[in-house]
Image (cartoon, rainbow, N blue to C red; front, side, top):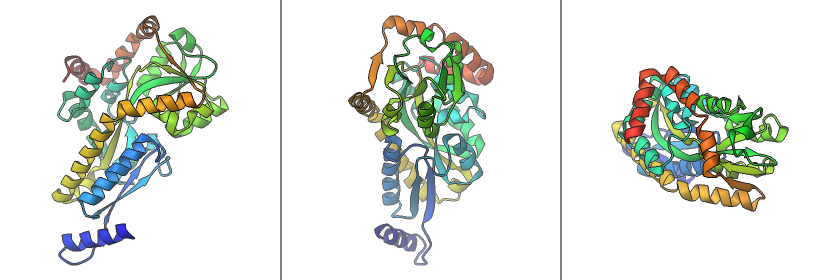
Length: 328
């Protein structure tokens, strides 16, 4: 009720007295609302509604109740929904360059990640420009942390442990990495991975550790191998036509809210991951960290993945890799 009164008051103010309904901003999220991305969207919701005086009514549809992760780019691009959260790799079909964040061991320091995702960077600018051609544009980025592997009855310490195993992946380049290591990749949406592990559809999982906590994956997997072989990024995207229909003032308020939410999740990522690892261990999982020799074995199989990326992304991909290398 309080929310409705705020929206009415804002509408009266913005229209000089004639009441208009608050503009809805529906956001699709494949993760549970209790996930750190869900919590971050709730912060964004609070900031937007406060800054716009309720003129924008944010509605979050979590746990893939409207769209699965793989469906979000098309849903937002077509205008079927105003906004959505998608793993960056979901845009690889339209823009192969986006998978730079899933190149094995490329983003091996926090400084490299922050330089690449910074507003105005060559990496972020190129990726956002490509995504904008799909009918949706990036409003802000949501950090998700490093990629890990999940298994039962033993860790996946080296490529030899992956050989012949079916592996859940959530993107093309991650699948190329699994293939290079001798495994068999299977593309499975995040919202479907619990059942895939429970039913034995795959032998090994690939995700971020925060997903282990929010989805309670300790109920179906017993071991985490900390590989950090990729940096997982999600983006909040908005439909271009919907966005252009908003006033510059409202757009500014939404951008300011997005900036607050973006910084909050990025700055808290180490804390979020630490809490997720602790929760996993408290619920019976074994967390295995790799030796330098184990890491070297993984890195030794990575070159074919880089070759495949350059084949699909072309000159733009090479420019992106060069930009990551020089920190721009």
